[in-house]
Image 1 (tube, rainbow, N blue to C red):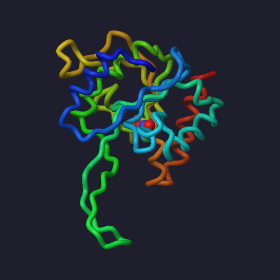
Image 2: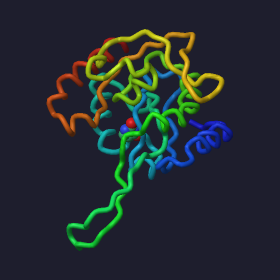
Image 3: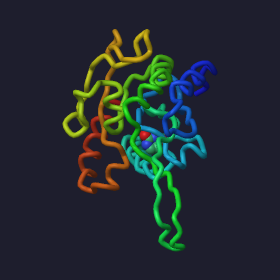
Image 4: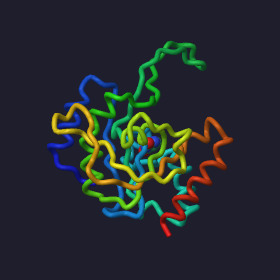
Length: 211
Ligand code: URA
């Protein structure tokens, strides 16, 4: 998606001081069958500007396949549009030299708030019929901290969503309700293989809603 320059400039300004790099625009059609709201891009995504194009994306595409969706039919975005990283010093196992590495990390609440104007803009513009959040960050960005993925996954939730209020520093609820299905993040299976059947079951809920 092409955003107004002033909107991107505002989000960059709000992000000053955070360890965030790059910027990946959301991708997909307006009024799609499904909108995915993830967490934040990783290293691969900030290089090729394609959301979910890394390992997690491979898993996500399998899920799309399972309900007969293609990437082109889905609008894909995330709560934060830049890569959150940490800075760590470690010894290189091969050379024995000290080196600095910058692994991905989960975005914090302030970073999600800093990037909120972009997601608010997208949701209004894209007007999705159905939103699937993947992981806790996207879920809590839209529905607040009372919702947790371990209990909310696979449920069909009709509810207003959180958007920035006029003061731009906290959220308030939208007037309209949206249909939201919280899903596990596709990368969750890399850490816990036992989630696979639950993920498949949750995607069957999406499949039924799409019919
Ligand atoms: N996780 C996300 O939330 N977005 C990406 O683009 C990649 C991984």
